[in-house]
Image (cartoon, rainbow, N blue to C red; front, side, top):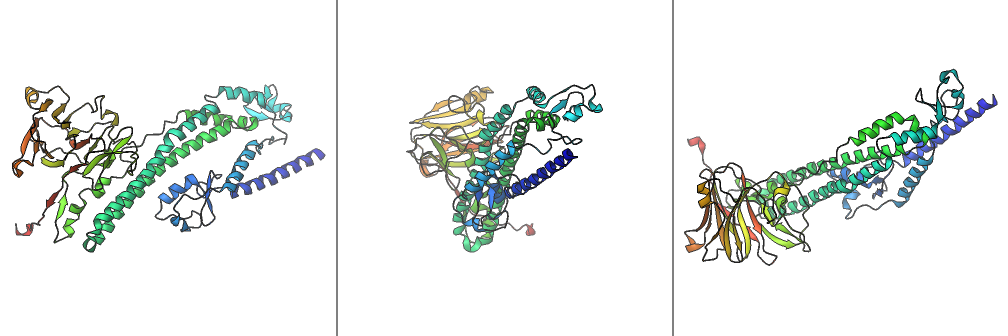
Length: 519
């Protein structure tokens, strides 16, 4: 009887301890992820949130508000919220203590004794009383620590292997996702600034149009930032699973053996997890959609004004670079130059769309009709203009000689020498051998502008100097080819810093409305 009362007192003390532990755990739980705080930061309203939870929470909402009380004072913060060191230390101590504490299910449900043994036939934990009962008569029972050690050796992966995989994901994938989210925000801020600058001149007439386009920009920013946040959240979820698996594998022997089958299944599932996918193409903002031909697209709402039109708009997401410098696209997306990375220009991260060289591509391809555009090359000593077919993979852009294998047609200038180059170097016909193969051109007068004319149906790509005699353009070279794929205009900025930007010239366009009701 005395022994039974002692067991009851032990159970009451265990329940009381579990209740206090549960209350403490609630106080150390993040209000967003509902888990123990990881690197908590404190907001102006004095509430704390995990740093990793705060960015997705703010990204998915129009204002930076507290997840607990909706206080909006965080919107005035110019720096990230400070770390709550006291709470961080409490959470780390709590997690360390919880990892050392034995689990509540450490006693036999039938006899209340500690579970010291494991029945190999029944695959169940057993106490000393169970060993002598009829239920386990003739069964083989082994100490828990001995059985747990052997079972750990039989796992398809160790805790160290799982931890290594988690660290690899955190090091090589999560940083990319977070950097992508920050770059999307930087693009949004810069693009919004440019949009406001252009709209300032048309404020009286175009206030409503400006608001509509900025709303579209912010909507895309929210969607793409939310998409990046989802990728980060998905990665965090997988890493949480890895962390749970590590905790289960490293748990005390009793808990490990009680959950052994589930642990085996979890570890096998983790080993089958695929690597986190790379950043998909289109992760970043489609800046060309918002800024390209902006004044032309809104001209219909202006009656007594003329607008400039760029036949070719550059895509800044394709601007390439080298080890120490980048190709920088102008704010209006019509010019580009090569700038050192120590300049005021923001560094452009590696993306699936980006060139691996000093070039930038147009935002839209051409696959029919007749098109022409002028490129102002000025006094630059090394440059290239032309068209190319877009490869499927970024690593295919350039070969060892500086350009990618595949079809491209371009006019090059290098220190006074002009060359028409077609790739691949082998012709498809005798006609292409005469008109499309690579070769040096004889140019007596240095052109300051190059006019590129593409006639898709006729299969001709011509280069000329439009400045000769101010009227008749001087022909430089014509490629003849039967185009079957979409081609993209592009420019190469090979001059090292001293050259002026290559500029795609805009045109003044006068638009009149035709009254179809009279037809």
